Length: 525
Ligand code: KIV
Ligand code: ZN
Image (cartoon, rainbow, N blue to C red; front, side, top):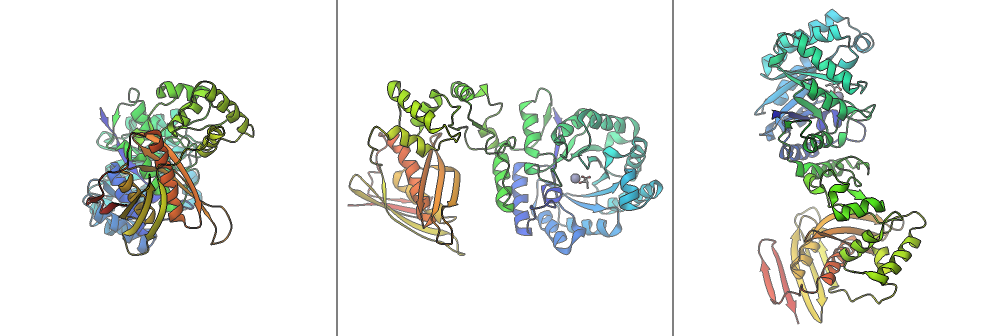
């Protein structure tokens, strides 16, 4: 197996694109997550940009142990020294210098000629090597650079002690065959290149960033530069999750090993969205909301029989919520029956046929149906069963002092149960109270909050999905207090599970101290 280095530039090339700015606390949080994810090199920023940028890179350099920290510099003394200062606390630092080499950039961006460019590359590589044993050189706009000059520029960097040569497709202009050929040419024509790590850095202007990065591997690259969710300048950079999962799923074609913990891919993607407030497009490969959702009847039927029919990787393998069958007019009877069973309303035979007809009529507008709509259709002919638990009190306190605390009182079969718990926030605390009482903890795998009227006194609608014993149940509640609505939505999802599993009885023990969760649960007559 060939070892492939994953170089993440979410905090540099990604962060500098519109809408993705982060403060130093947020950057540190994401850096910790990226290290846990298993990236080899983390490009933490561009220290010469401002004292804050320098301090941000320094913070990350001080913190990371298993991932190497890189910082970017133009070919100037000022930039390289800023990088050196920012990387002082790093266990292993890398100075990444770059200079444009295409004639277009030399003439119109830098206003210098080729010999001057070569001189700058030589001086800057030498200076960077004085500060760091590991120096990466990028000839910016490599894919639009005259090949002979690219070879010359690369040779200068190699001769002056660079350790990594990165060939960026800065404007996303290249194609897979062309990009691969460029790596082959550099490998064939630059003396000493066999001692270097060759690296690919692709932008996505033609949607080819991942394809080009994979082609670079075939040309000899052993480092790929990429970002979480593919964020980056313009159409973005090559997306880390797509590259890693392509290697994972198509290991026969790409026999490369990385250190990436694939089950942390989705949580990392979600963390980036939460920190920046920018969501992921629904159909984004690997991490989009629809990446593991199926609506067509034929597909749903296949997935219900064997998910491999329409899934080339499992959501679990990337840490994503389980496969979702979206019910709409393309869905078949099997999918409707399966979802109703999941929701605690098993149906079959003529009842299923009746429900399915009504379901199709309800879908005529083209909309997909929520679980609650489906339950309503199923219940049209029978009274709704009493939910196992009802809420009689929700009290939570939260604010700047952590942890949040909550008390919840539930009733079941004439008995009242009370639990108190701590949590990261009030919603976490009330859900922990409910878990303590039911004795059946659930994991929230989807949570949405929506204002259903205008103004700050608007009612909030909470829709959530929970995972219990590998099955998904949904809950929904509306109210002016979003913590209470969250508790009710959560309980309604848990109730669906309990209604489908009558063998799960309420706790018999009158009072339990659950030290691990720091919660208390007791039954009151
Ligand atoms: O796209 C690019 O050329 C870059 C370099 C600075 C590596 O981001
Ligand atoms: Zn770039």
